[in-house]
Image 1 (cartoon, rainbow, N blue to C red):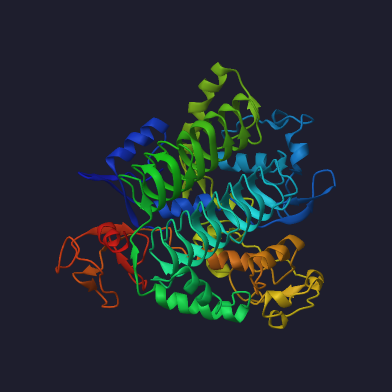
Image 2: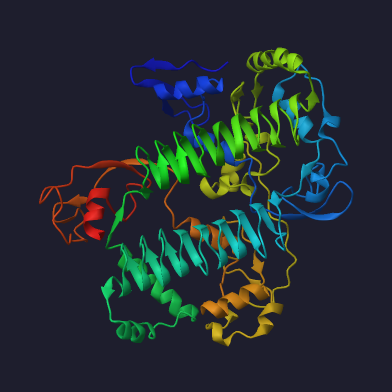
Length: 598
């Protein structure tokens, strides 16, 4: 049974089953759990999010045979004894998920029965809806001429990216919205021909920008608003800018590396805003746009309201807790990739257009279902067995009671009763195949020690024909013959980044490099992805004080340009920020930051 929480005046303090640290359940949280008809959580928010993520494999794609012997691309490793269909077969009418239904067995834990069902019901090979020449994409929809793109929607001609929305002709971007001709952009929106930048909006023909808005023809700038022809935050005439920028050859790998280092040193001397929380009253987290009353939320936009512990959400998500990749729905709890007309969905993965859904996987247009897999347009089903409404409503409370009376106990002796998300040890994916490795990275030894699966990479039989040191320094010297080469990744699989060990350059990619005057990369797509992740702050919040100490920053590096509201005294403001206290950035509160940049 779950330990009872100790009630105090400001909420309830609970010990996390997983990490053993304490966390607080606020009074308003109990209101939400009552709406969902689930008990309060026994895992802290971070451990709970990590557990959710172990059920989402985005980037690990495999060649394997489907249930009929056909070679397909799949997120399920070839050694997994699962029934896998390609998208056309899975969405077809030649099979019925109800054929796999089973009676509930009150002599065994629910999660054991769900795992057995999971191994019998056909699973879709990829979550890749309506692809056009975009077969190597996953958790995507309406992609055209795109390659190795993940967690994205409505893109065209996008390569090696994650979180791209309504974007085109871009490559190696992370969480970019409504942009074109972007390269190595991170958390940017409405940008054109932008390179090596992060946290920018409505910027064009620029490179190496941080937290800039409305800027054009700028290079190596931080915290600028509506400026043109600036280099390292200094203004130039158009003629002077063009003359100066001609000195930089970004088509050269070595020249690009030197400038990037110079820019890093420059950027560390300027203040950073404590969080990118814009037009989001009553909210905490980072990279929030047009949200209301959202707490501990990250990468959310487009009218997300009254949510807590959410990552990667949008499109009018309302009144939901502990979700990754949720939107266009309400009353969701501990779900992955769920939304588009959903309500009251809990402990589930990939649910579309349904309500009253619990413990289900990849179900569409279905309501009042529990412990079901692959259902479409069904109602009143439990373990894929069809019931009448009366039978279902009579059976469901008995199943909930049974889950509490006979909990599932994992290898770490952690108890899973009703309300707990699926145990990680039952996930069809190894820990390092999932996005958990991106947000909460572990070594192989750490993962195994926690009882998580780990998949060693397949032995690569690549015949490397080109070492990274042998690549031409400048893109203008790259011949078409590079398309025939197999290039060794500079990391040589000595990193913890799902290194591919080697990679090839495809024609669409080479054309992009030439058009944008960008040198060939020296690392594989996976390693480049992890390098972008490291440029962002952690999915975590620390309580900190503003580092503005009167006339300058507390480390003495930055001197304020204008007088602040606190004048010569230290700023009294405190905040929740994703910048850890030991990070080197100078972190200002919103008031001090706006005084300096507007």
